[in-house]
Length: 350
Image (cartoon, rainbow, N blue to C red; front, side, top):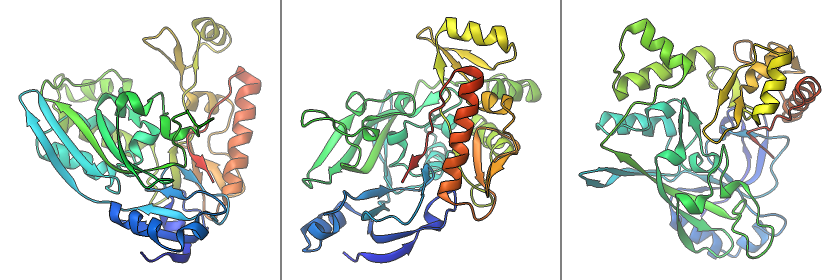
């Protein structure tokens, strides 16, 4: 294994922030990690801090050069593991591009992931964040994953229950609090992920943007490919392309509140965008809250709020991670002072 030194990371984070990795190793197979761990350099490489696992860098804010060893996951491969009368079990390497994988499944006639089209990042990062959009979350299609314990080098497999999925959350985002805790933040490298796609497919259309597409086209029974195309068009109209304007997609989670809290906010702000949830709570649109505080189009230094979607922070050119973080904190303060709600960022800050 070759460990590269002083590697520029601007191309490896969708914000396009300029920084370097002091040391970086490309993991293209489990054997690469095994060879690296077996090398004489491993104790020195990991003495100061555990390695930092990097996928597509689409959910990341880099605030300076990265001192821990960066493990750049580039494990490729897609395959149909099994087909049964009830569905398809498909697998992808952690380094595969997520959107390309979604396209690949649809091209083969395996629907189920179409609502998750055009989400940036890699397959390996998808369970970490429990990505979701337009009424579907990864956990709804997830089957299992294979990962490697970075401390012991041992491989292990997790099912959905063991991943501890929540709203934009999983066991991979939580550090262990003691030896008995199964928090895996900083402890695991995901190698491949499997998805179960039932043949008894039903479209998920319960979002206003999709309902508008139905009204515009008159197509009340869209197939999976049509939904895929609609969602790609919706996302491209709302969200900036990271290849053109650096960004990390939705920067804040949509907060959930109780019915009483929601009623109190509606009494003061009748137009607040909100969605009743099955568990009796209410989800508020973070983008609406930010827009209501007057942040759309504003910024701090070279970091700004996208003028078409207040939930997205962008790199206007030359932004530093510090500017992005300062802007995010200022937005959090504004929303809390006006609504009494604390917005939680989605990206990892390193």
